[in-house]
Image 1 (cartoon, rainbow over the protein chains, first blue to last red):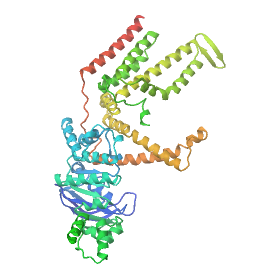
Image 2: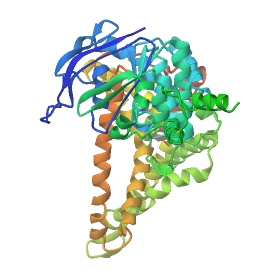
Image 3: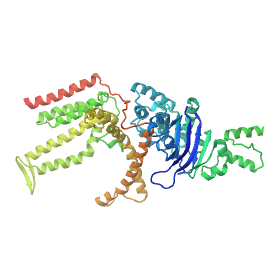
Image 4: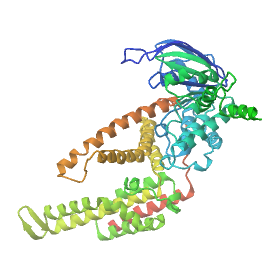
Length: 275
Length: 267
């Protein structure tokens, strides 16, 4: 199980003047789900790429499970972290589903016999066994993202980073992927870091980090962040339905518990009040 | 749209040719194309034509599919043949006007060229119709293996090739999307002289190139995140295994070759 330690990182793209991230520090506990939210261009994606070693910070350090991320440790880091990108099309390398799942295994020099087993079990986890020999052109966006996930699961990572991985999917496919991730996290103790604008996705996280103007403006339990209507409006993710309902109820003089309730909890609370 | 890329594409039916190893199919296809240039008489031409017809029959792919493969190139074949007829000289002259003349040799040459074109295209279509593109890429990779000795980066080349093939349908899709977007802005692709039509391609090609570069960059990042290192050794998921039927296919090819040279020598 891998914890992540980020210490004082600053990152500047070579051709820009202002840093994208300024003096960022946070910790991610093993087997937890963390959401990173913020405006477009606030540096969320850059942060995710820094954690995976796809970019190297200008100053500061990142440690994954005690291993410092730098050019010499990239092999180990890429093994521990699986990365699902936004565009389903542009991360599909193989000619068929099985070939694509095999790509990462080939890079790790896994023997072909062992590969077959791993591919089958990874495809089963994401429910794509039937599509093993299908070509990418015949898959929907949601199916391609599942394959991307299978490609990562076959490598047995400790951390999965989702960089707006559900943003190009329709609502149903998005829900399916999120349910799948929740299951994986609970069953296999995988840590999840999701970069997102989607409130349903944020709600699944244990912790939420809010980035604005290259800095962390809030880092805490998701329930605390989702209660902060002013902050949510400011970064443009909007206010959760349950919070809107709570404000409406409060406006009518109904006394609500002073904590964040998701829709399910609110439903439960209301039905108790009505009895 | 995706069906017209390489001389007609893969036809997923069941046949003995579909089951053959892609490597033997590729070798046979190349050998056959070479043999075509040894054709020097009607009898040798018929011999290879019969061999090809048997292959077509065995492929279980309809004649119509093969015609689809030849059709887009038919105009080019006809123009080439016409040039041969009109501009070659030698032998008896039947008709002439300025530098153009129809001669006996010209007619024979054009007939040979016509035959070569049709047979080569059909032979390649037998390969592409019975073999999925990624298998052809695997076979090419195997064929190129000896080049490693002279430090040709065979692994990188084959990965590039298979990625290129995988993205062909994606880029075709994108092209039609861009064309629709330009039509929505009032562009008419079917109007004007050839020059204007060529000019109209620019607003398609530029976004297509820009997007392809973006795509390539994202793909490269995704590959890196999955642990790809161009200089490191990799294992291969798809293992090609020789079967007895592949040896038989090779023997058949040898029979065709020996037969051809026997006909050349003895008739």
